[in-house]
Image (cartoon, rainbow, N blue to C red; front, side, top):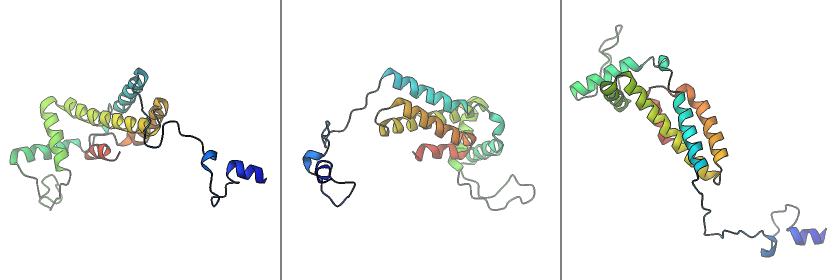
Length: 178
C-alpha cells in the first residue's frame, strides 16, 4: 500500500501532494494552446448545421403576430417615431403601449418592403443560420476540435429551440446568448 501511494499520489486523498514525476506530462506545455484545424469535414458539418437550422424556418403558418408587427414597423417608418398608444385594439384603442421590440418591427418591415413575405423569411433564415454557425463554432472550439460533437450538440440545441424559430423579435436574442 505504501508503494502504491508513493507511486500514484495516494488513494484520491487531496491532502497528499503529488510529486512532479507522478504527474502526466502535458505535451503542449502550459502556455501553448492546442491548435484546432479547419478541414473540409468541419466545413461540411458547419454547412449541414446551418441548413438544418434553416429548415425549421420554412413553416410560415406559425407567424401569427407577424402582420401587426409589420404594420407597426410600417407606421414607425412613416412617422419616424415609436408608437406610444395601441391603435390596433378594438376594445381599448389608445391604451398606453410600450413597444420594446420596435427595432425588430422595423427590420421585419424593411425586409417585407424589399421582398414581401419571402424577405421576412430570408431575414429569419439568415438569423437562424448565423445562430447555428456561431453555436457550431463555439462548440467545436470547446470540444477540442471534434466536428462530430459540435454537429451533435448544435443539432440538439436546434431541436430544442426549433419551436421558437419564428419571425418574432426573440430570434435576434439567440445571437447574443451564445
